[in-house]
Length: 178
Length: 159
View 1 (cartoon, chains in turn purple, cyan):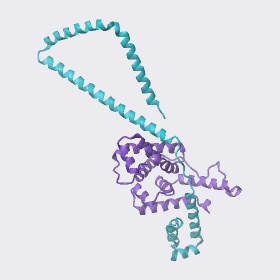
View 2 (cartoon, one colour):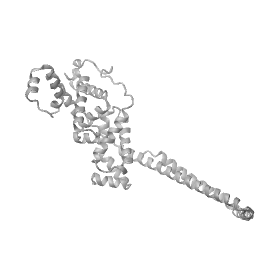
View 3 (cartoon, one colour):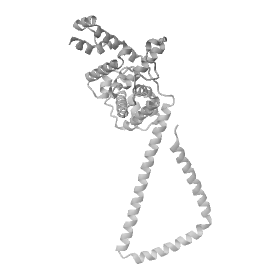
View 4 (cartoon, each protein chain N blue to C red):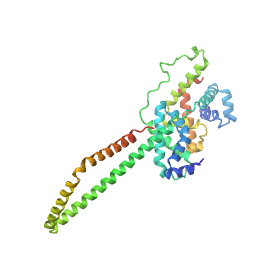
């Protein structure tokens, strides 16, 4: 199994199998990140595909100063922010289809599902950069340092923005979290 | 005023990045609002950690590779087209240059004779080739059909 550096070199030489290996290695990470910022699964797949097309186009210019994963995070961030510059679909926390009075629901699992649904809707109402930070930070293995490098922000700024994102989320979910 | 200070630290405490000490710990123990904020921040942190991790669809790699190949094929086609166009332009420029040279150098009369000789040769060649024309036309049509089918299949390939 090739390491990232060998994989990139092979891709640059036009080795199609190497690029396929690169997709296999990073597809779950890329998809998970995007699926956490975009509600629609098919849209998430389109965006994830767009990320890999950008990687394919950009590989000849990748100088290897950053880690491959960091470079990929940066591309994911650009794709997500660019996509979310479009007007967002209106998302209300009080969807008419969901019961409003959680206390009347005896099944606790259903209550949890409802709470999770409201959490997703609340996240959808956050600004694009906050959404991406929340998605990436709570995905296993993504550290502050890597996030800061990918987003080209100081680590302190990443921490501050993440705390603000969570404050905003708490305000949106105030009644549910009590 | 002190509530603001404590509330600013709530997210970091909930995430386990900061341990409440001294004044903040004392305040959190006595202020119900700040204690509630910390509890809800912890609950939110748990919920965020419990968010499901979605995996890429099973055919994702093959679909992406198909798009990559299609794009590469299109860009190669564009390059081929540009190259052929450039060749055509160069040939046109050469023909125009020769034509201008012949007209300006007084070689028109000589070239007229040459044209007559060439056209006579062409007519004679045409007479010889005429019986085989249907065969050549059939072969050309077959090759063109095969190329057309190949182009169509490449263009619409999705997997």
